Amino acid sequence: MEGSTEMGVQLGAIKRKPKGLAALWSIQNARHLVQAGFLATIVMMAVRHAIVPEGAANAPVSPEAYCPFGGIEALYTWITTGKYIHHAHSSNFVVLIGVLLSALFLKSSFCGWICPFGTLQELLMGVTRFFERRFKPVARFARALKARAKILEPLDRILRWGKYVVLAYFLYGTILVGRMVFRPYDPYVTALDIAEATLGPGLIILGAVVVLSFFVERPWCRYACPLSPVIGLVGKLAPVKIERTASLCKGCNICETKCPMNLPVATADRITAVDCNNCLKCIDTCPRGGALDLVLRWPWSRPRVPQVPQLVVTLPGK
Amino acid sequence: MRVNPYAYGILALVIFLGVIYGARAAGLWHTSDRVTASGEAVTIDVNDVDTVKGWMTVNDVSRAFNIPPAEIYAGLKLPADTPPEKQLKEVMRANKMEVDDLREWLKKRTRTIR
View 1 (spheres, rainbow over the protein chains, first blue to last red):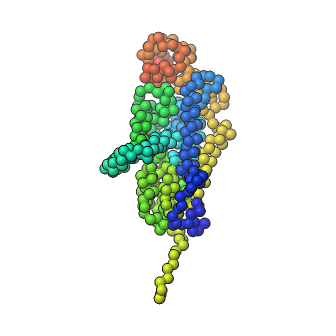
View 2: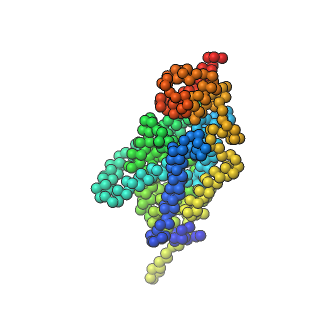
View 3: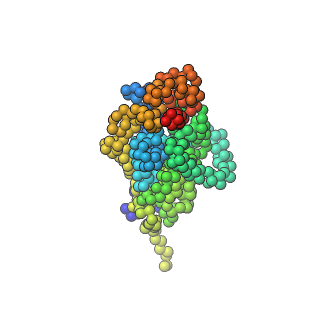
């Protein structure tokens, strides 16, 4: 489809704002719908698990059985002994395979579209955005905070390495001890079992993530999620990636201001960053048709320069 | 080739849910530590402390290893009035311990007796 994008917009033309029902059916609303479905399913499972006594005939499955990281933690013991470590089941491996397969083809689609803990953090940031829009003093405070937060950028860059440290500790501990060493610190597991939670590192970290989520987009994913580097690194091989066409981009930087992970979208040709969670907000908010798109191509091939219809101006007398 | 963002979302769902439902259909999906993958009830094997699960009671452990509950409580420094019909995970959580601590204690004790 040369000369127009998949969304039917002319390359380089200003996208028209959808109205009425079309405005409701945006990419972001579709994504939020999918996210809400997964979050509601997990919340329902956690509530049922807390209410129905264990041992009852209709005792529900623990939502922990759906955690892909349980699969990573259990992998070494399963390969070396054929046994599952405590709290891990074959379901954890299956979900992990699902996550890795989607990473292999679609990069971090799990993080941006499915992960319930990521959705929870987005919801909390949504509360901040709501108050920013409704109350001017809150908006002023947020602007002042953002202006001052610029000095924290070097710290942000350093802290992003935290997730690799967490992953290394996790794997080392699991291999050495043969059990889920990170479980007492895991805020997701604590949230799933909140009815039975006691004051400990898990609850403190969960509290910190909840409070930070009002001020920083997806703080757990950004700084500490050990699954994020695994997905991001596998996702480097994915054939579907976000690409920017420099010839169509006007450098307005809207994509960068909307990117929840503060990635340099406006200057990159192809988004391969491990931190990108493929929420597609950059594509959704880009005002130019075709300047930012999801593109299917071999991971090692170079981005293509599209043929843009040129306006030919003939000057009189020439 | 450009990819429609809606198609991307649908494909993400198809891959993720396809793997889960595919595994279920193939009988590879197992979520319980009360029954094995082949459907048999999980019981304690005295030669393998890893078969002690959090949903079991102090009485279950006491009977399997032939250790009186009082000795278990003393060994782990748990209150002597702990009801032996309580689930291990509840007992351990109430005393800020893990079921793994009990497994370690059982491992040491059975090693000492042998």
